[in-house]
Image 1 (cartoon, helix red, strand yellow):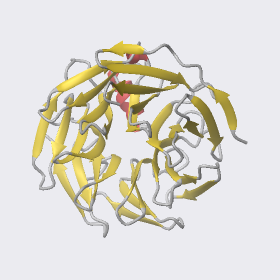
Image 2: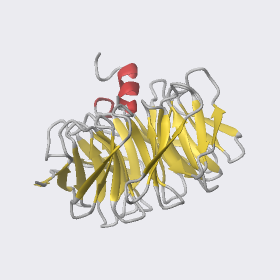
Image 3: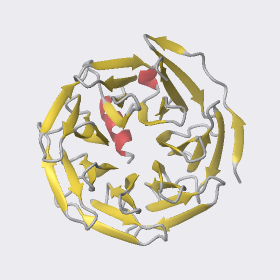
Image 4: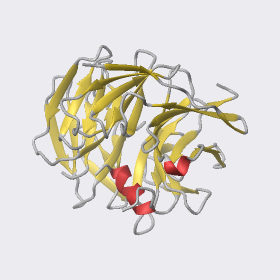
Length: 329
């Protein structure tokens, strides 16, 4: 299957000693009030950068899905990466934990990983060898919460590695991304089921269906008025408030395939469009897009706010990390 087809992209979104190098930065691309700069990941060919998060050390940390490594990128584009226990572990998503370490999912190896900013690695195997952990986030209870896309469960792991799992009520829902909500619960997307789930820290799950038979909800983040998520099947960003009420924001472009999503420091919600754009939604629902040079071939996937206040994103097939700066940054 060609890598740039819509079906292939949707499948890629679901994820089915340290090396040091200086990245050579591409020329910035200007788009209105935004500037896109790209930094190649030169430590490994085919690294497939996936999840990304800001670290406690002022750097960006990202999961190298294709190389079995965890990457660190300084603000100037300098890359250092650290190997996991194997090249085929499939790191997928990454987040900063309450212990100031970086926690990540290993989709292929069915493990949860932890790495300190000095590169010390610990891995915690899940009970099932084919759980397929995907998204991960810090919870309000100082534990890490994650999705099991193949195991159809939501998992919780403590700082000492104790794992608890909760089955998702809908069979074969393929839970994908997860984020802490402003209501003290965790919210997650169900890629195959077309639903949004809410789980309390005690493990009680409630599900909310999205409109349309194939919404394919992917990324999710807490934002103004509730939780915001991307729905590639309906080419929308959707907001769900904490009572379950939905507001839909159609996205421009018939080829739009929104994936990752984050909340910017400007109060807007930003999303990565796998068709080759980075978009943002203002308070009135107005959508602005920023093109990534040759972006349709690079597959912008996940994004986060960096220590420099800019929005950073990964390019899964472009083997690079990008930065979007606005004039307000």
